[in-house]
Image (cartoon, rainbow, N blue to C red; front, side):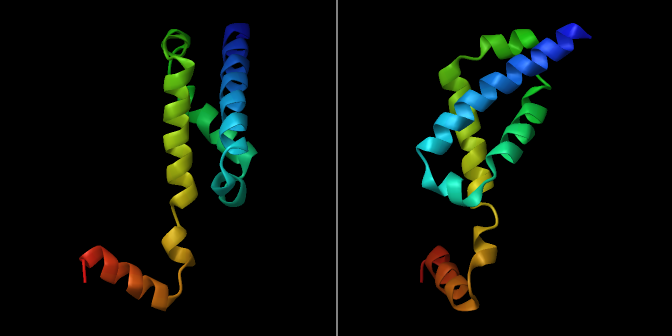
Length: 97
């Protein structure tokens, strides 16, 4: 059991460090995301990897993966915030009108 606790602490520390850096450089994340919720979600997601698999992922690769997930989380639901007029403009742009 101590190995699991140590691994989760290692994972949490590693992810938290990366998320802190990404949030510092991105105002969209600061406005749209809750940092602690994102860290918890990412730990839950990445804890499915074994300790060996996580150690094999470089910090740069993990940062790219986490950044991609945060971008998706930040922009998901953006269309729900639009007014009907804005949705019509968006739909026209997507359709190429």
